[in-house]
Length: 232
Image (cartoon, rainbow, N blue to C red; front, side, top):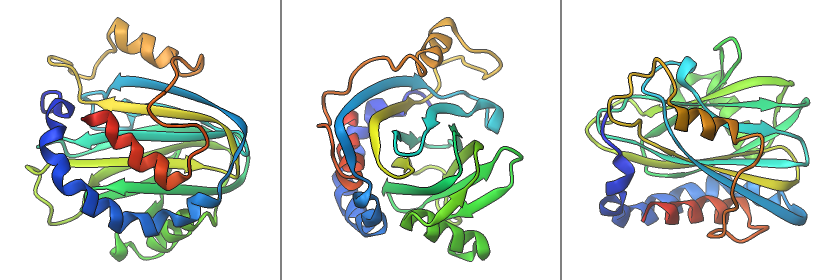
């Protein structure tokens, strides 16, 4: 794992706006997921685990229909091969996922058994069809635990850092949860959480902090594009 890559993201942001424009059209559907009333904003900054398996997945929250919207922003640093994020869905429904960031980022949605349900790789067949449904808000998922797997597209160099931001929502929302996932701390083997990491994860359900940098009630596109302000 590389050192804290986010400390140097500012040097890579110059070309990010162009790639974001390419991604905006794909997440236009997420703009129809409206804020309801006064939206509560919560945020946390965590260190990703050094584990390169689902066992080290970063918890980004609970997805409740017409209640919560979950957002995560991070970087696949040079020589980092994979990031995992987990979340819980409280009821069956149609889920929407938005994505912005650098080109060449592959996103897969997996169920609790590790089966891939949707894949951004156009060559993944039915899973790619499901990914397009996910982007359009037409993919029905059951209640349960899910994982997002983030890697590079085939042919992309491991030496090239990849910035990305993802968002999942089911219907409308009144609570907005933001996770900034930083690189693992130096010396972290992924075998155990430090006291600070555990405290941060525990803070997920208590909704620590308030994100003032992103105004209440933004569309999905505005929300994800604004998340990159946290890097500079």
